[in-house]
Image (cartoon, rainbow, N blue to C red; front, side, top):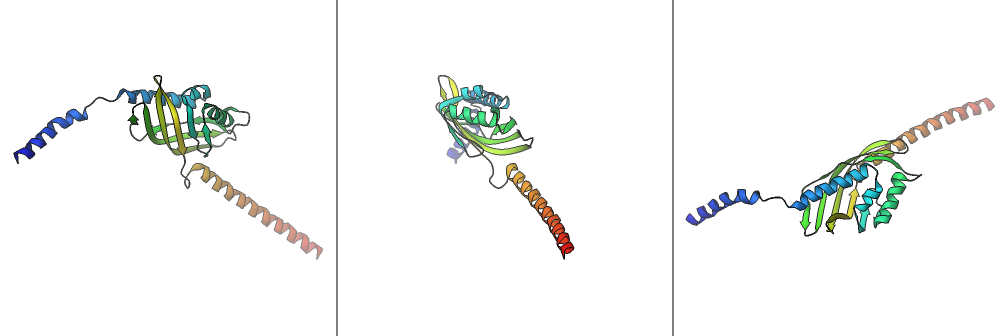
Length: 193
């Protein structure tokens, strides 16, 4: 009984001290790194974005396309955001981590969600809620993204909702055109008879 009481007493006295351990400085560095990435994307600065990527980076984009290496990321970003035939006019991302990154020496693994605003060149605006995971490595004193994966819900996302709405409008317009054509053909047929 005395032994159990001693164990409980030690646990009660030491647990606040164990919980109050200082945060690993890497977490502060990673928060600053995340802020730099977000700023690069939101300011549409692909040169700054590419400078934050590892030479062997792999990025899986929302559309499922994969870019390997900074130059493929630059090309994808240019095609989607800055080129003459770009699709996206503007983007504002707001990623949030689910919990602190797991640290493995000079490697950090994080995951979370993001609520992003997209404005397409076509004028369409929508919000996307996505899930992401990222791996960063620290080389020469700098954190760099080595892997990033971003995904949408397959059955519940704004792009799918927009496609459904377009399909409904298309069906309604086609139905209306069919009724009008049927009416016109019927009138013409009756006149000939």
